[in-house]
Image 1 (cartoon, helix red, strand yellow):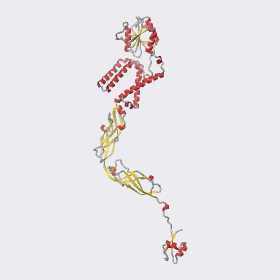
Image 2: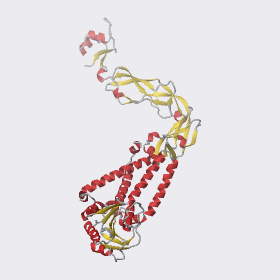
Image 3: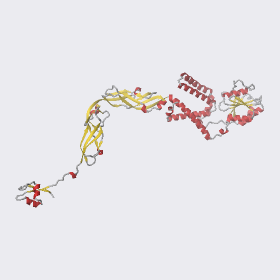
Image 4: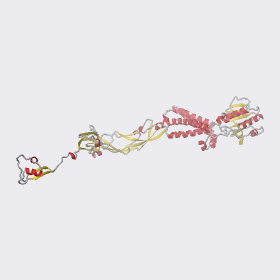
Length: 540
């Protein structure tokens, strides 16, 4: 069996296997030691053979064993209806799911041995059936129910030579005399010793079809024989019979009879784990060939869009796909393995309803599409047009302190784009990626920055030969401060009056004659005249 059948175990699969394992394990404990368990195991063998035949491709053989298995189930229900009814009657749901297997009250072996040898001593013939796990109702006939406590005196009375129940058998169940005067099925085995009478043949016949132990007391020879599973063993002494009955009815190992609760739980857990393993194997077989369903949501890929058109929008961008296939394949499926697409080749501009079907879904081999939701998608297409637009730099932040931008230029100044008619018509320029002025190294001169254009819409794209990379050049210079500005001072003037001379004016204002000539650009020997405005220099 492939290992990957178990790698797809999910938590609810584990829970499923645990529940079935628990129920089957409880049934095994309930039917342990009975013929019903052997029949169930036989049916399981038939099922295994049928599964092997089916896996090997033996169609006729598989069909034959499938039919035999179905008929066998009906036969078992009919033949063992009494035993099934008894199990259901004695088992309530609480005990079935949570209780320990109910132990049958143990027989008083010493009392049985005493009664058998007392009958042999008096040469009184007897046939005593000790019921174990198998129900005996289907095999015995006549007689009547007694349900009395077992004791040696009552056994002697039942098999007394003048008793009407002398020739029948006594059935002992759970330390009580269940039925008396009962007749058992005779064996059809040949080659038995000549001295075996009807009692021996009846004891062998019952032991062949059930797990009951039968004691035969011969009135001719005064012998006590123990018959089990068709074998007859003569008991020469009471101790020998006691040991044999201990083996059959109570278990040979006294330590097992005194097994602690902890040991019982260990054995119970081991049996449950074995059942869990077997159920897991069955789960692995069926999970590999049984179908399963799963829903997967996947995006729609719009393919083969014509060059003269632009895909604008769709009524649905994802589709839910219901997928079926073998459970092993479905369990290992990932959403990435499911792809949906629509082929837009040959479509025209406008709004178009497009149908989604299984041909639009790509799946791994072995899986099939059951349903798609939605099954129709409306797509809107527009004509593609071209246009030249201006490139504008996006400047953010502030320059380092003390610097300013005198001029900004972009290379190229414009680019040619194409896109949907409605988008291109509303676009006059494209911006660049933001340029942070605070990260620009301060220099006195031109600073060039490489950046990218931002396409404002998904439908816009640059025409071939147009680069998305642009260069932004910025001319930087230091800002002027107040200390760099020339100081402005107020100039003093004197209006010349009649009769004044340069020497007199110089004495009046404290300025030399040479300074006056320099400030007023007077040549040596040049005279001043009334109403002339003479500069006296800056005010002090």
